[in-house]
Image 1 (cartoon, rainbow, N blue to C red):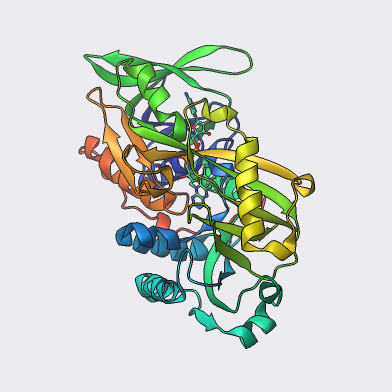
Image 2: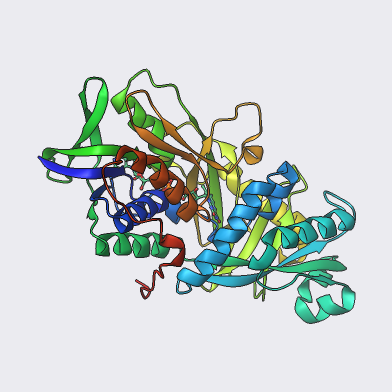
Amino acid sequence: MKSFDLLVIGGGIVGAGIAWDASLRGLSCALVEQGDFASGTSSKTTKLIHGGIRYLEQLEFRLVRESLRERSVLLSIAPEFVRPLPFLIPVRGKRPRPWLLIRLGISLYEALSGSHGITRPRFLGEKDLRREEPRLLENGYRRAVLYYDAQMDDAGLVLAVLKRAEGAGATLVAHCPVVGFLKEGGRVVGAQVEERPSGTGSAIRARRIINAAGPWVDRVRRLCDPQAKPLVRMSKGIHLVYPDLGLKTALLVSSQRDGRIFFLIPWKGNTLIGTTDTDYSGDPGEAKADPEDVEYLLTEANRALPEFHFRGEKILSTFAGVRPLIAQEKRDPWAVTRSHRIHEDSNGLLTVLGGKFTTFRKIAEDAVDRLIRSFPDRKLAPCRTAVTPLGVSRY
Ligand SMILES: Cc1cc2nc3c(=O)[nH]c(=O)nc-3n(C[C@H](O)[C@H](O)[C@H](O)COP(=O)(O)OP(=O)(O)OC[C@H]3O[C@@H](n4cnc5c(N)ncnc54)[C@H](O)[C@@H]3O)c2cc1C
Protein backbone atom coordinates (compact mmCIF):
# COMPACT_ATOMS: atom_id res chain seq x y z
CA MET A 1 0.00 0.00 0.00
CA LYS A 2 1.34 3.47 -0.90
CA SER A 3 1.98 5.73 2.06
CA PHE A 4 2.29 9.56 2.28
CA ASP A 5 2.47 12.28 4.92
CA LEU A 6 -0.61 13.93 3.42
CA LEU A 7 -3.49 12.90 1.19
CA VAL A 8 -5.48 15.72 -0.44
CA ILE A 9 -8.97 14.91 -1.74
CA GLY A 10 -10.00 17.17 -4.64
CA GLY A 11 -8.17 18.65 -7.61
CA GLY A 12 -9.80 22.10 -7.66
CA ILE A 13 -7.91 25.29 -6.75
CA VAL A 14 -8.03 24.63 -2.99
CA GLY A 15 -6.71 21.06 -3.19
CA ALA A 16 -4.07 22.16 -5.72
CA GLY A 17 -2.97 25.02 -3.43
CA ILE A 18 -2.66 22.69 -0.42
CA ALA A 19 -0.65 20.09 -2.37
CA TRP A 20 1.68 22.86 -3.65
CA ASP A 21 2.24 24.45 -0.24
CA ALA A 22 2.63 21.13 1.63
CA SER A 23 5.13 19.79 -0.94
CA LEU A 24 7.19 23.00 -0.85
CA ARG A 25 7.40 22.70 2.93
CA GLY A 26 8.75 19.15 2.64
CA LEU A 27 5.77 16.85 3.20
CA SER A 28 5.24 13.86 0.91
CA CYS A 29 1.83 14.44 -0.61
CA ALA A 30 -0.68 12.68 -2.86
CA LEU A 31 -3.72 14.36 -4.42
CA VAL A 32 -6.66 12.44 -5.90
CA GLU A 33 -9.38 13.94 -8.09
CA GLN A 34 -12.57 12.12 -9.03
CA GLY A 35 -12.80 13.58 -12.55
CA ASP A 36 -10.59 15.91 -14.58
CA PHE A 37 -8.48 18.39 -12.62
CA ALA A 38 -10.35 21.73 -12.29
CA SER A 39 -13.61 20.12 -13.45
CA GLY A 40 -15.57 21.32 -10.38
CA THR A 41 -16.42 24.86 -9.21
CA SER A 42 -12.92 26.13 -9.97
CA SER A 43 -13.60 26.31 -13.73
CA LYS A 44 -17.11 27.81 -13.40
CA THR A 45 -16.23 31.14 -11.82
CA THR A 46 -16.72 34.78 -12.87
CA LYS A 47 -12.93 34.70 -13.59
CA LEU A 48 -12.18 37.49 -11.09
CA ILE A 49 -9.34 37.80 -8.63
CA HIS A 50 -10.90 40.54 -6.57
CA GLY A 51 -11.41 42.04 -3.15
CA GLY A 52 -15.15 41.69 -3.61
CA ILE A 53 -16.58 45.18 -3.45
CA ARG A 54 -20.03 43.86 -2.60
CA TYR A 55 -18.80 42.22 0.62
CA LEU A 56 -18.40 45.72 2.07
CA GLU A 57 -22.19 45.84 2.43
CA GLN A 58 -21.94 42.74 4.63
CA LEU A 59 -19.24 44.56 6.66
CA GLU A 60 -16.73 41.81 5.76
CA PHE A 61 -13.76 44.19 6.00
CA ARG A 62 -11.28 41.48 7.02
CA LEU A 63 -12.23 39.29 4.07
CA VAL A 64 -11.99 42.20 1.64
CA ARG A 65 -8.58 43.26 2.98
CA GLU A 66 -7.29 39.67 2.84
CA SER A 67 -8.63 39.23 -0.72
CA LEU A 68 -7.02 42.48 -1.89
CA ARG A 69 -3.71 41.34 -0.44
CA GLU A 70 -4.03 37.99 -2.22
CA ARG A 71 -4.93 39.81 -5.44
CA SER A 72 -1.61 41.60 -5.20
CA VAL A 73 0.26 38.33 -4.49
CA LEU A 74 -1.33 36.59 -7.48
CA LEU A 75 -0.64 39.53 -9.81
CA SER A 76 2.99 39.18 -8.84
CA ILE A 77 3.46 35.37 -8.82
CA ALA A 78 1.10 34.48 -11.69
CA PRO A 79 1.01 37.34 -14.24
CA GLU A 80 0.44 34.78 -17.04
CA PHE A 81 -2.94 33.93 -15.51
CA VAL A 82 -4.01 37.07 -13.62
CA ARG A 83 -4.12 40.59 -15.08
CA PRO A 84 -5.58 43.95 -14.03
CA LEU A 85 -9.00 44.75 -15.46
CA PRO A 86 -10.79 48.14 -15.39
CA PHE A 87 -14.39 48.22 -14.12
CA LEU A 88 -17.05 50.89 -14.39
CA ILE A 89 -19.92 51.21 -11.92
CA PRO A 90 -22.46 53.37 -13.76
CA VAL A 91 -24.96 55.29 -11.64
CA ARG A 92 -28.47 56.41 -12.64
CA GLY A 93 -30.79 57.81 -9.96
CA LYS A 94 -30.76 56.70 -6.33
CA ARG A 95 -31.79 53.03 -6.56
CA PRO A 96 -30.60 50.61 -5.46
CA ARG A 97 -27.46 52.49 -4.33
CA PRO A 98 -27.11 56.28 -4.39
CA TRP A 99 -23.99 57.97 -5.79
CA LEU A 100 -22.76 59.01 -2.34
CA LEU A 101 -22.86 55.41 -1.05
CA ILE A 102 -20.96 54.19 -4.12
CA ARG A 103 -18.32 56.91 -3.68
CA LEU A 104 -17.94 55.96 -0.02
CA GLY A 105 -17.77 52.24 -0.85
CA ILE A 106 -15.09 52.64 -3.51
CA SER A 107 -13.03 54.93 -1.26
CA LEU A 108 -13.19 52.31 1.51
CA TYR A 109 -12.23 49.58 -1.00
CA GLU A 110 -9.23 51.64 -2.02
CA ALA A 111 -8.27 52.28 1.62
CA LEU A 112 -8.51 48.57 2.45
CA SER A 113 -6.17 47.74 -0.43
CA GLY A 114 -3.48 49.80 1.38
CA SER A 115 -0.22 49.45 -0.49
CA HIS A 116 -1.75 46.71 -2.68
CA GLY A 117 -3.89 48.97 -4.90
CA ILE A 118 -3.66 48.64 -8.71
CA THR A 119 -4.62 52.15 -9.95
CA ARG A 120 -6.48 54.80 -7.97
CA PRO A 121 -10.24 54.93 -8.73
CA ARG A 122 -11.69 57.88 -10.64
CA PHE A 123 -15.13 59.46 -10.35
CA LEU A 124 -16.47 60.23 -13.82
CA GLY A 125 -19.00 62.82 -14.93
CA GLU A 126 -20.84 63.08 -18.24
CA LYS A 127 -17.85 64.44 -20.16
CA ASP A 128 -15.51 61.67 -18.93
CA LEU A 129 -18.12 59.02 -19.69
CA ARG A 130 -18.36 60.24 -23.26
CA ARG A 131 -14.66 59.45 -23.59
CA GLU A 132 -14.49 56.24 -21.50
CA GLU A 133 -17.72 54.43 -22.42
CA PRO A 134 -20.17 56.55 -24.45
CA ARG A 135 -22.70 53.71 -24.71
CA LEU A 136 -23.46 54.18 -21.02
CA LEU A 137 -24.82 57.65 -21.83
CA GLU A 138 -27.26 56.07 -24.32
CA ASN A 139 -28.46 53.88 -21.46
CA GLY A 140 -29.29 56.86 -19.26
CA TYR A 141 -26.18 57.00 -17.08
CA ARG A 142 -24.54 60.34 -16.29
CA ARG A 143 -21.98 59.30 -13.67
CA ALA A 144 -19.71 56.34 -13.01
CA VAL A 145 -16.80 55.13 -10.92
CA LEU A 146 -13.77 53.68 -12.69
CA TYR A 147 -11.76 51.26 -10.56
CA TYR A 148 -9.47 48.27 -11.06
CA ASP A 149 -9.64 44.61 -10.06
CA ALA A 150 -8.15 41.56 -11.81
CA GLN A 151 -9.28 38.89 -14.26
CA MET A 152 -7.91 35.33 -14.31
CA ASP A 153 -7.82 32.15 -16.32
CA ASP A 154 -9.36 29.96 -13.60
CA ALA A 155 -8.77 26.44 -14.96
CA GLY A 156 -5.35 27.48 -16.30
CA LEU A 157 -4.37 28.67 -12.83
CA VAL A 158 -5.45 25.38 -11.21
CA LEU A 159 -3.34 23.43 -13.71
CA ALA A 160 -0.35 25.73 -13.17
CA VAL A 161 -0.55 25.27 -9.38
CA LEU A 162 -0.85 21.49 -9.83
CA LYS A 163 2.15 21.50 -12.13
CA ARG A 164 4.15 23.37 -9.48
CA ALA A 165 2.97 20.90 -6.81
CA GLU A 166 4.12 18.01 -8.97
CA GLY A 167 7.45 19.75 -9.55
CA ALA A 168 7.83 20.00 -5.75
CA GLY A 169 7.28 16.24 -5.43
CA ALA A 170 3.49 15.73 -5.13
CA THR A 171 1.84 12.68 -6.70
CA LEU A 172 -1.32 13.70 -8.59
CA VAL A 173 -3.98 11.29 -9.84
CA ALA A 174 -7.08 12.27 -11.84
CA HIS A 175 -10.14 10.06 -12.42
CA CYS A 176 -9.57 8.46 -9.04
CA PRO A 177 -12.37 9.19 -6.52
CA VAL A 178 -12.11 8.45 -2.83
CA VAL A 179 -14.85 5.87 -2.21
CA GLY A 180 -14.17 5.02 1.45
CA PHE A 181 -11.78 5.48 4.36
CA LEU A 182 -9.41 3.30 6.39
CA LYS A 183 -9.70 3.77 10.15
CA GLU A 184 -7.69 2.56 13.13
CA GLY A 185 -8.88 3.23 16.67
CA GLY A 186 -11.58 5.57 15.35
CA ARG A 187 -9.04 7.76 13.47
CA VAL A 188 -8.69 8.02 9.68
CA VAL A 189 -5.37 6.59 8.50
CA GLY A 190 -6.02 6.26 4.78
CA ALA A 191 -8.54 6.19 1.98
CA GLN A 192 -9.85 3.72 -0.54
CA VAL A 193 -9.77 4.96 -4.10
CA GLU A 194 -11.11 3.61 -7.35
CA GLU A 195 -9.26 4.19 -10.61
CA ARG A 196 -11.52 5.05 -13.53
CA PRO A 197 -12.49 3.79 -16.00
CA SER A 198 -10.90 0.44 -15.03
CA GLY A 199 -12.68 0.30 -11.65
CA THR A 200 -9.49 -1.01 -10.00
CA GLY A 201 -9.58 -0.33 -6.27
CA SER A 202 -6.58 0.43 -4.06
CA ALA A 203 -5.77 2.02 -0.72
CA ILE A 204 -3.57 5.01 0.17
CA ARG A 205 -2.23 5.47 3.70
CA ALA A 206 -1.52 8.95 5.03
CA ARG A 207 -0.69 10.54 8.38
CA ARG A 208 -3.13 13.37 7.63
CA ILE A 209 -6.00 13.56 5.15
CA ILE A 210 -7.57 16.82 4.02
CA ASN A 211 -10.92 17.00 2.30
CA ALA A 212 -10.81 19.81 -0.29
CA ALA A 213 -13.75 18.49 -2.31
CA GLY A 214 -15.49 21.89 -2.63
CA PRO A 215 -19.28 21.46 -2.77
CA TRP A 216 -18.78 17.69 -2.34
CA VAL A 217 -17.09 18.00 1.09
CA ASP A 218 -20.11 16.82 3.09
CA ARG A 219 -20.51 13.80 0.80
CA VAL A 220 -16.86 12.91 1.41
CA ARG A 221 -17.29 13.40 5.19
CA ARG A 222 -20.27 11.04 5.13
CA LEU A 223 -18.09 8.33 3.50
CA CYS A 224 -16.11 8.50 6.73
CA ASP A 225 -18.99 9.06 9.16
CA PRO A 226 -22.50 8.46 7.78
CA GLN A 227 -23.92 10.57 10.68
CA ALA A 228 -21.76 13.63 9.91
CA LYS A 229 -23.89 16.80 10.06
CA PRO A 230 -23.65 19.03 6.95
CA LEU A 231 -21.30 21.99 7.30
CA VAL A 232 -21.62 23.47 3.83
CA ARG A 233 -24.43 25.44 2.25
CA MET A 234 -24.40 24.94 -1.50
CA SER A 235 -25.24 27.93 -3.66
CA LYS A 236 -25.52 27.75 -7.44
CA GLY A 237 -24.27 30.49 -9.76
CA ILE A 238 -24.69 30.64 -13.51
CA HIS A 239 -23.15 32.70 -16.31
CA LEU A 240 -24.25 33.58 -19.83
CA VAL A 241 -21.64 33.74 -22.57
CA TYR A 242 -22.94 36.49 -24.85
CA PRO A 243 -21.48 37.93 -28.10
CA ASP A 244 -18.98 40.74 -27.60
CA LEU A 245 -20.72 44.00 -26.61
CA GLY A 246 -17.68 46.03 -27.65
CA LEU A 247 -17.11 47.33 -24.12
CA LYS A 248 -13.64 48.62 -23.20
CA THR A 249 -14.14 47.90 -19.50
CA ALA A 250 -16.06 45.45 -17.36
CA LEU A 251 -19.34 46.77 -15.93
CA LEU A 252 -20.70 46.27 -12.42
CA VAL A 253 -24.47 46.82 -12.39
CA SER A 254 -27.30 46.11 -9.93
CA SER A 255 -30.41 44.02 -10.33
CA GLN A 256 -33.56 46.11 -9.82
CA ARG A 257 -35.39 43.02 -8.58
CA ASP A 258 -33.29 42.37 -5.48
CA GLY A 259 -30.44 44.89 -5.52
CA ARG A 260 -27.83 42.15 -6.16
CA ILE A 261 -24.69 43.12 -8.04
CA PHE A 262 -23.72 41.35 -11.27
CA PHE A 263 -21.06 41.82 -13.93
CA LEU A 264 -20.71 42.14 -17.69
CA ILE A 265 -17.10 41.29 -18.45
CA PRO A 266 -15.11 41.15 -21.69
CA TRP A 267 -13.95 37.50 -21.85
CA LYS A 268 -12.20 35.61 -24.63
CA GLY A 269 -13.68 37.81 -27.35
CA ASN A 270 -17.18 37.51 -25.86
CA THR A 271 -19.02 39.02 -22.89
CA LEU A 272 -19.54 37.07 -19.68
CA ILE A 273 -22.76 37.99 -17.84
CA GLY A 274 -23.22 36.79 -14.28
CA THR A 275 -23.70 35.59 -11.77
CA THR A 276 -26.66 34.33 -9.76
CA ASP A 277 -26.68 33.03 -6.19
CA THR A 278 -29.41 30.52 -5.30
CA ASP A 279 -29.63 27.65 -2.83
CA TYR A 280 -28.85 24.26 -4.37
CA SER A 281 -29.33 20.74 -3.03
CA GLY A 282 -28.59 18.42 -5.97
CA ASP A 283 -25.41 16.74 -7.18
CA PRO A 284 -22.87 19.56 -7.72
CA GLY A 285 -21.70 17.81 -10.89
CA GLU A 286 -25.15 18.20 -12.44
CA ALA A 287 -25.76 21.90 -11.79
CA LYS A 288 -26.95 23.73 -14.89
CA ALA A 289 -28.46 27.06 -15.92
CA ASP A 290 -32.24 26.68 -15.52
CA PRO A 291 -34.65 28.84 -17.59
CA GLU A 292 -35.43 31.02 -14.53
CA ASP A 293 -31.69 31.71 -13.95
CA VAL A 294 -31.31 32.79 -17.58
CA GLU A 295 -34.48 34.90 -17.42
CA TYR A 296 -33.20 36.66 -14.26
CA LEU A 297 -29.91 37.69 -15.87
CA LEU A 298 -31.46 38.69 -19.21
CA THR A 299 -34.24 40.76 -17.58
CA GLU A 300 -31.89 42.50 -15.18
CA ALA A 301 -29.28 43.13 -17.90
CA ASN A 302 -32.01 44.73 -20.04
CA ARG A 303 -33.15 46.89 -17.10
CA ALA A 304 -29.59 48.02 -16.43
CA LEU A 305 -28.67 48.52 -20.11
CA PRO A 306 -31.89 48.77 -22.17
CA GLU A 307 -30.15 49.95 -25.34
CA PHE A 308 -28.20 46.68 -25.63
CA HIS A 309 -31.45 44.70 -26.21
CA PHE A 310 -30.27 41.41 -24.67
CA ARG A 311 -32.09 38.42 -26.18
CA GLY A 312 -32.15 34.74 -25.28
CA GLU A 313 -31.51 33.55 -28.84
CA LYS A 314 -28.18 35.43 -28.92
CA ILE A 315 -26.73 33.52 -25.92
CA LEU A 316 -23.72 31.48 -27.07
CA SER A 317 -23.56 29.18 -24.05
CA THR A 318 -24.16 28.98 -20.33
CA PHE A 319 -22.31 27.36 -17.45
CA ALA A 320 -23.10 26.76 -13.79
CA GLY A 321 -21.06 26.11 -10.67
CA VAL A 322 -21.80 25.43 -7.01
CA ARG A 323 -20.22 27.41 -4.16
CA PRO A 324 -19.23 25.49 -1.02
CA LEU A 325 -20.23 28.16 1.52
CA ILE A 326 -19.98 27.88 5.29
CA ALA A 327 -23.53 26.99 6.43
CA GLN A 328 -25.29 30.13 7.72
CA GLU A 329 -28.93 29.18 7.37
CA LYS A 330 -30.54 32.46 8.44
CA ARG A 331 -29.09 34.52 5.59
CA ASP A 332 -29.92 34.74 1.89
CA PRO A 333 -27.31 32.75 -0.09
CA TRP A 334 -25.76 35.92 -1.54
CA ALA A 335 -25.28 37.31 1.99
CA VAL A 336 -23.50 34.21 3.35
CA THR A 337 -19.85 34.85 4.22
CA ARG A 338 -17.15 33.98 1.67
CA SER A 339 -14.54 33.56 4.38
CA HIS A 340 -13.05 30.11 4.99
CA ARG A 341 -12.64 27.71 7.91
CA ILE A 342 -10.64 24.52 8.47
CA HIS A 343 -12.82 21.98 10.29
CA GLU A 344 -11.63 18.79 11.99
CA ASP A 345 -14.00 15.89 12.62
CA SER A 346 -13.49 13.72 15.72
CA ASN A 347 -12.06 10.99 13.42
CA GLY A 348 -9.24 13.38 12.43
CA LEU A 349 -10.44 14.17 8.89
CA LEU A 350 -9.70 17.82 8.07
CA THR A 351 -12.14 19.65 5.77
CA VAL A 352 -11.90 23.06 4.07
CA LEU A 353 -15.16 25.04 4.21
CA GLY A 354 -16.05 28.20 2.30
CA GLY A 355 -13.52 30.55 0.75
CA LYS A 356 -13.04 32.17 -2.65
CA PHE A 357 -10.80 31.34 -5.57
CA THR A 358 -9.02 34.65 -4.86
CA THR A 359 -7.98 33.51 -1.38
CA PHE A 360 -6.93 29.96 -2.31
CA ARG A 361 -3.24 30.54 -1.46
CA LYS A 362 -4.11 31.83 2.04
CA ILE A 363 -6.63 29.00 2.56
CA ALA A 364 -3.88 26.51 1.67
CA GLU A 365 -1.39 28.27 3.98
CA ASP A 366 -3.87 28.13 6.89
CA ALA A 367 -4.68 24.46 6.18
CA VAL A 368 -1.02 23.41 5.98
CA ASP A 369 -0.14 25.47 9.11
CA ARG A 370 -2.86 23.51 10.88
CA LEU A 371 -1.93 20.03 9.67
CA ILE A 372 1.84 20.32 10.21
CA ARG A 373 1.14 20.35 13.95
CA SER A 374 0.89 16.58 13.44
CA PHE A 375 4.57 16.45 12.40
CA PRO A 376 6.41 17.83 15.47
CA ASP A 377 9.26 15.40 14.77
CA ARG A 378 9.98 16.96 11.34
CA LYS A 379 11.90 20.12 10.42
CA LEU A 380 9.64 21.64 7.77
CA ALA A 381 10.21 24.80 5.72
CA PRO A 382 7.94 27.84 6.28
CA CYS A 383 5.23 28.70 3.73
CA ARG A 384 6.81 30.09 0.55
CA THR A 385 3.88 30.22 -1.88
CA ALA A 386 3.47 34.02 -1.63
CA VAL A 387 6.93 34.51 -3.11
CA THR A 388 7.24 31.53 -5.47
CA PRO A 389 6.38 32.46 -9.05
CA LEU A 390 4.04 30.04 -10.77
CA GLY A 391 5.99 30.99 -13.88
CA VAL A 392 4.53 28.47 -16.28
CA SER A 393 3.28 29.45 -19.68
CA ARG A 394 -0.36 29.03 -20.70
CA TYR A 395 -1.69 25.53 -21.34
C1 LIG B 1 -20.74 30.95 -10.17
C2 LIG B 1 -19.51 31.14 -9.34
C3 LIG B 1 -18.67 32.23 -9.58
C4 LIG B 1 -17.54 32.42 -8.80
N1 LIG B 1 -16.73 33.43 -9.11
C5 LIG B 1 -15.61 33.64 -8.38
C6 LIG B 1 -14.70 34.68 -8.76
O1 LIG B 1 -14.87 35.36 -9.77
N2 LIG B 1 -13.63 34.87 -7.95
C7 LIG B 1 -13.40 34.13 -6.82
O2 LIG B 1 -12.44 34.41 -6.11
N3 LIG B 1 -14.22 33.11 -6.48
C8 LIG B 1 -15.30 32.83 -7.24
N4 LIG B 1 -16.13 31.78 -6.93
C9 LIG B 1 -15.79 30.91 -5.81
C10 LIG B 1 -14.74 29.86 -6.22
O3 LIG B 1 -15.01 29.39 -7.50
C11 LIG B 1 -14.70 28.69 -5.25
O4 LIG B 1 -14.56 29.18 -3.94
C12 LIG B 1 -13.53 27.75 -5.55
O5 LIG B 1 -13.44 27.46 -6.92
C13 LIG B 1 -13.69 26.45 -4.78
O6 LIG B 1 -12.62 25.62 -5.10
P1 LIG B 1 -12.52 24.16 -4.50
O7 LIG B 1 -11.20 23.60 -4.88
O8 LIG B 1 -12.86 24.21 -3.04
O9 LIG B 1 -13.73 23.36 -5.18
P2 LIG B 1 -13.79 22.61 -6.58
O10 LIG B 1 -13.18 23.39 -7.66
O11 LIG B 1 -15.21 22.19 -6.78
O12 LIG B 1 -12.87 21.35 -6.37
C14 LIG B 1 -13.26 20.23 -5.60
C15 LIG B 1 -12.86 19.00 -6.39
O13 LIG B 1 -13.08 17.84 -5.57
C16 LIG B 1 -13.40 16.76 -6.44
N5 LIG B 1 -14.02 15.67 -5.67
C17 LIG B 1 -15.28 15.65 -5.16
N6 LIG B 1 -15.50 14.47 -4.54
C18 LIG B 1 -14.35 13.75 -4.66
C19 LIG B 1 -13.97 12.44 -4.24
N7 LIG B 1 -14.81 11.62 -3.57
N8 LIG B 1 -12.71 12.00 -4.54
C20 LIG B 1 -11.85 12.79 -5.23
N9 LIG B 1 -12.18 14.04 -5.67
C21 LIG B 1 -13.41 14.51 -5.37
C22 LIG B 1 -14.34 17.42 -7.46
O14 LIG B 1 -14.42 16.67 -8.65
C23 LIG B 1 -13.71 18.79 -7.64
O15 LIG B 1 -12.86 18.85 -8.79
C24 LIG B 1 -17.25 31.53 -7.73
C25 LIG B 1 -18.08 30.43 -7.49
C26 LIG B 1 -19.19 30.23 -8.30
C27 LIG B 1 -20.05 29.02 -8.09
